Length: 308
Image (cartoon, rainbow, N blue to C red):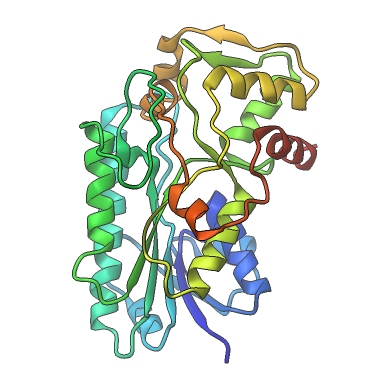
């Protein structure tokens, strides 16, 4: 019997790949989207398309009745040039409101979904000066705005749980077809590869294919619940990431850029690239999850090839 998935964020970088993979796996996928024409264009084979805006109720709630799963990947990116705390707070508030809205709808829906997969971030652990201690799903966070916002996002998703809840604590998602890495690949090929000082800060990452594989596994195994760090098992520092990227693109060695530039060009996401922590996928490793791209060199070679 075909299982039905109601999904938000299906037009985003991660969402497009997840939606396509689930459709290929013969799930019946219904997309909730703000721009229905764009959703139809980017994910042409979904079973349905319904209007969705955070904070509003709509006829889309009926889609949850009889659905098997909800995948909530909605949320504007934090990385946006020339932005600051106001942008971070706006994005965070939208994510929290969207999660609360979905949970409330799940409660109201007759015969509602049994599973909620909800996006989150390794920002839940906070950011700080470079430190070598491993950060797993049980690590106490460093207080701060990213930590507070991510915690509230997760709490909203798990509020009065009417469904098995799985939290995807996403790191830097690598793909050659969009997002921050696509820009970095283009810069490297122009001889402009760089990293932000000091370069010793950790940069947790994961290949998009492994995010998709995680979603499939989490949907299919009812024993999976709670938070999972979606990071690759190989830990790399910012400078090492840039050097590996340069080799993958046959580019010149990267230059060191002042940390101040991160505040300008990365905006609200500057704390992430300047104070990244050494996050490890402890629960995934314990589960026996097999990463398709466990090492950075292999992941970047694939992404560089896909971006040509």
